[in-house]
Image 1 (cartoon, rainbow, N blue to C red):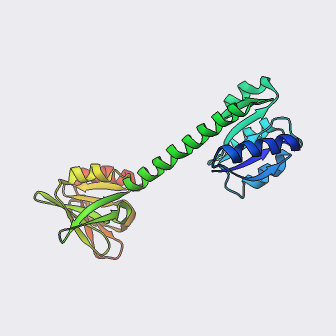
Image 2 (cartoon, rainbow, N blue to C red; image 1 turned 60 degrees about the vertical axis):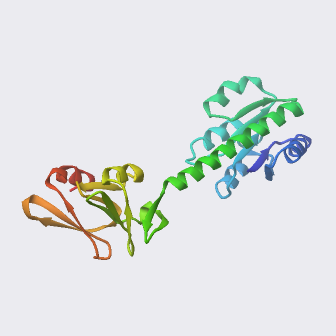
Image 3 (cartoon, rainbow, N blue to C red; image 1 turned 90 degrees about the vertical axis):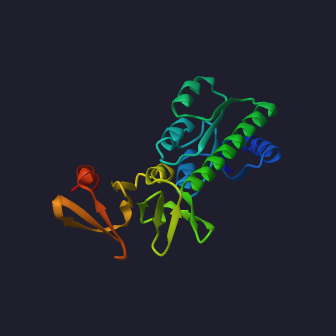
Length: 240
């Protein structure tokens, strides 16, 4: 984790840095004495956590926290202040912790452990998310791990489902409905009882007989049918 300290008193900054560096794996990448410099820095640099005093020059810590709270990807904020009266405001900006001065080393260590545990849990969730975006497929008695987004379409044939990427064909010993649940992606649409198509791979929509469509996929190698029963849902999805 990368952190910055925002504190206008030099001795307090150095003490806090000492506790962080000697009791955690958190890296302090910068220190600041005013809020405006912080705002400029975090717009250009990745920061996981901000140790923030409230009474700082130019842009006070609470206003800075409210601004940061509007970011799409925001660092965690740990207030370290002598002012108890801002605790309610800290809750409104979703502060990770609120520590009153003079703080104890034990209190700081407890907070640092909480931060590191949160980071570890986040890393696990990210790894699980990456795994969920992959699928294991059979070909020539071997198992290949394929990115779901690389799949063009799936086709049901008897008791099996054939999965097509740009250059390969794989097989799954599952029904196409089960494959749809496994893929679990908003970009895939069951256009027909026998077809599951990746909507992002559609290159051309061709009107066909009985008011249906043929979907030509990128590269021109694949064509997928949209059944009459699926036409309404498909048109809504594609804004037709």
